[in-house]
Amino acid sequence: MLTQKVVLVDKYDHALGEMEKMEAHENGILHRAFSIFIFNAKGELLLQQRAKKKYHGGGLWTNACCSHPQWNEDIKESAVRRLQFEMGLLCELQHAFSFIYHTPVENGLIEHEYDHVYIGYSNENPIVNVEEVENFKWISMTQLKKDMNAFPEQFTFWFKQCVDSVIDKNLLRTL
Image (cartoon, rainbow, N blue to C red; front, side, top):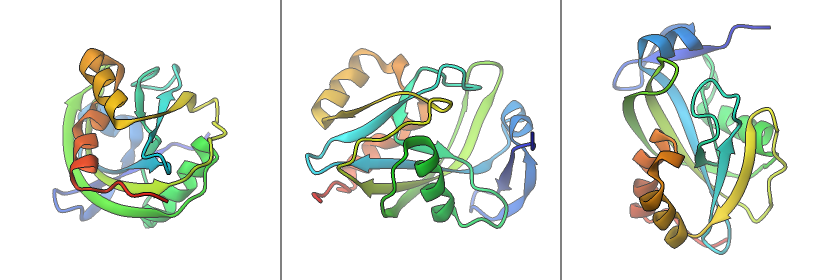
């Protein structure tokens, strides 16, 4: 099996080099990532429940898809491929914004990512890759807020960090 790598970046997202993914997470080294938010015509957000066997965040609810682009790989193209791989969905994605976060997670790992957020729109139900995704659901913004307030521990850190920005920036639209 090939070693998975991440692209190390500075606070301006300038690529500095590569590092093995687990080493970057063990040492909390800033690296490039992306998060994808998919909405349907009803304004519902697609959530995925991460597979329980994931190296961290297993069983937690989060945005439709997230991952790490590779060296010299176009971030949007990587995001499109990963969305298809994890969720079986193919749709146009638009870059919305980026943010940096740093937080310890379980298993002694540290997430420190320069996260590019993409928005897409689809009315299709995903066909999930069970190696990556435990479950999925479409959820209204009202219900999402209720669930996040009642059970914040059931959601990934990065999702909680950026979902309000997705909503606040008026990134919702109808198909």
